[in-house]
Amino acid sequence: MRLAGKTAIVTGGASGFGAGIVRKFAAEGARVMVADLNAGGAEAVAAEVGGVPAHVDVSDAASVADMAEAARAAFGDLDILVNNAGITHRKGPMEEVDEAAFDRVFAVNAKSVYLTARAFVPDMKRRGQGAILNVASTAGISPRPLLNWYNASKGWMITATKAMAVELAPHGVRVNCLNPVAGETPLLGAFLGEDTPEMREKFLATIPIGRFSTPQDMGNAACFLCSDEAAMITGVGLEVDGGRCV
Image (cartoon, rainbow, N blue to C red):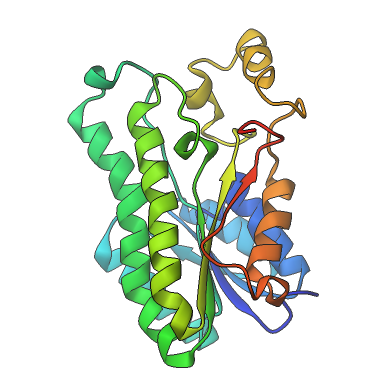
């Protein structure tokens, strides 16, 4: 029960890595808000863990503000914020990614971190405590061809994590990020280009441990970084990648 008595929000919590983080947090004693653009999925996962569902578009300021108000109504103070929601564009040459897709990737993967910071950092600073976890990617460390602007958005998130960490440390707020390799999530097909046994085998050959990241892997790592056991850890990007970036 490493998160007993804690309150948490996990964006993109209705599926994939986000759902794995939600389940681990709940198992460790946290009260969790499952926030997702997929309202039905958020309700299902929240019902499973005794949490609170929230429908949110993390790229929209008004929607994030509504989520923050719902969290205050449900929990009072928030201890943990996990910025997990993310998207990618279709694989292809950088000059062929259309402007709308580029804008959407940066709105969801980058602007969302700014919007949730505006919504929750003031209260965390006032209380002198809090943990923020951003879910970035190995793509931000070791970019893969044809995922160009997705790579860049995750590199932005890694740098934003470090910038947030040094600024908020004097206020008692820790900020870290996770860098997973691809996993069994709704984005896997987009990362591979096409989800075939051959493409999976080719991708897995780049991961020394020989398998994809799982929601359980992400939940375990997130739980540690957001717990009091990691009280001296801030500004860190933890690879959960089976050696992919070694």
